[in-house]
Amino acid sequence: ALSIARNIAVDCKMPVAYFSLDKKRNDLVFRLISQESGVPLPKMLDWNSLDVDERKAIYGAMKELGETPLYLDDTSVNAVQIRSRCYNLFIRYGVQMVIVDCIQFVKTSANGNNRHDPESEVASVARQLRELARELRIPVLALSQFNRAVDFRKGGVPHLADLRGSEAIEEYADNVIGIYRPSYYGISKDKSGNDTDNLAILEVWKSQSGETGEIRLHFDKGSRRFSNNSEPAHDLPAV
Image (cartoon, rainbow, N blue to C red; front, top):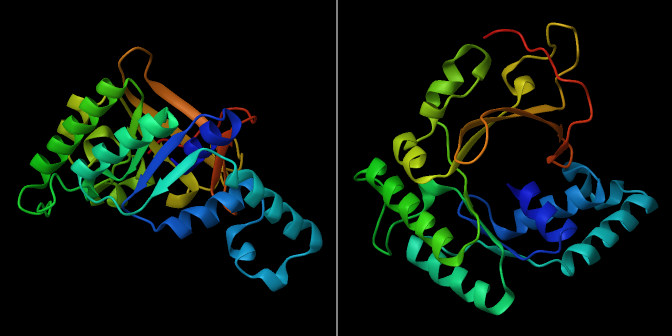
């Protein structure tokens, strides 16, 4: 999701609001600088290990991101706050996309704790985010956690039902997409012997106005950046 926010804000110069209930703002900034500069995140955090070119790349990335219309918020914790701040950002800066990470962490109100009935909480938040998208007429992307079942499945390939609150998410979302990295689950080669180390697969499970299927991406582990995959399709082993 951070790669999506970066691509829209940096490449397209379109304002994006990113609400993070999972990671702190500073963590997101470091990841963005790593993605933009191409310097792996662990190395970037060890300033003394960087050479002159890497430091120049980081400074350049910081300048570029400083002029980018990407608004990071790690303080909103409930749907009411997110809605209010989205309207404010829409009016002040013309925000064209909203990203929420992640839907299970969003409380329905200031007093909600999302524990008494998680399914109902997810349904309520999903409905409110859908209403927000329709009212502002902009896309709202909400990240979701998988349940633990996927970790115990051979190959780790996720399914729509693995999403926590999957029924509500499927009902209210126009599109539902899962992401899968074969190497994360120990699949290092496909049937043809091609390396899957930098392969990421988007599984389009629901598409209101398009087709379902796979979209293959390149994943750079150092910067944690996703990009278009220029390599031929991988023939993964059956799982």
